[in-house]
Length: 115
Image (cartoon, rainbow, N blue to C red; front, side, top):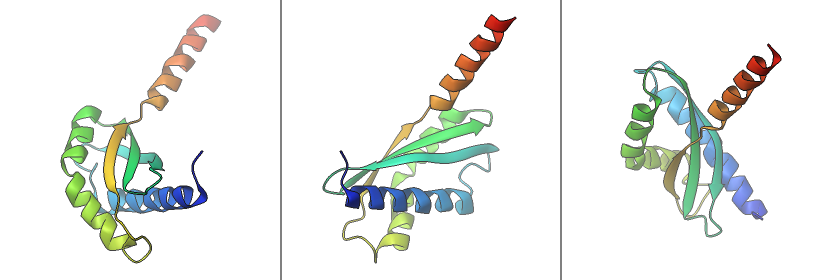
């Protein structure tokens, strides 16, 4: 069970990363919709596990890999935004959230079963 502090920090990171991705245009070149679906922080708040969902675009895996490659740059931008609210800027670990793909697959199977 996550503590209240973990939940608050995770929510703040999720909001700030969403704004960073939107303003900096990380997904503009691939014309995909990049969403921070959830963030989980470790108990010491040193690591934040960031789950990203990518809709549309030609190559979602390529976009995800480019974001992972820029994790230092993204962490720096995050640090500029939250440095007065946290003691340690957490290390970012990105994970591809494919839960939406799973939902779409199940819905497709249910539609086919109805026919």
